[in-house]
Image (cartoon, rainbow, N blue to C red; front, side):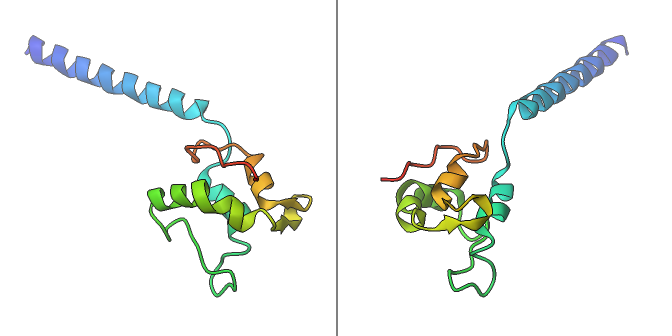
Length: 110
């Protein structure tokens, strides 16, 4: 009985420590979430029935989004000015908000 109590206590302590580590890691992440960036920068032009096409975070898988931001985003969006962010090009406005949800930096304008 004593041995099983020690095992249960060790497992509970381990789960507690892992939980604390997860909270500490989450607290280190700074910047907005990808979904918040989408709502602020993408949704105004890409909502349902938009002339620019409807895009949501669920429209593509992560690899497709990464490929878009790596290869197409700057070319297709650098001339678009964002009236909600001092008329900066959308590419500059988004780049000024680092996010842990974006795994790689957005390429600079060419």
